[in-house]
Image (cartoon, rainbow, N blue to C red; front, side, top):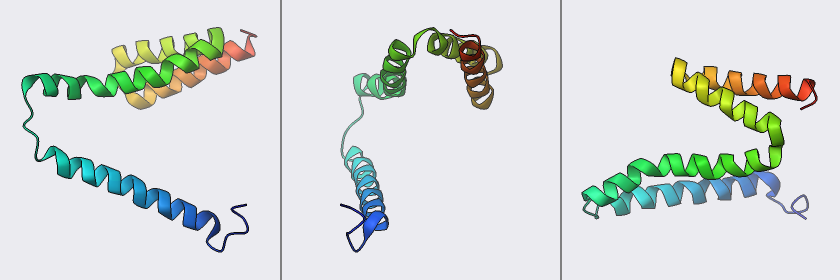
Length: 103
């Protein structure tokens, strides 16, 4: 269906980029009119962790033991090394080793 459209994938991608940029810009513009009190500030600080948890938990629930080991390896590496790249490498490596071992 999208292949027959004159703009095809490029048009769809452009529309999505414009939509995403518009939403982010509008959010930054609107937050300028809101007084950020202590309660809202605590919520905004906690929000990134909640988004990550909401993304990771379903993957771990479906992924089985290899996913649990990968997330655990990433968490431990992040706590020890405080390096995002090292945590990703540790998580991918743990998942690969667990799956190679048949877990």
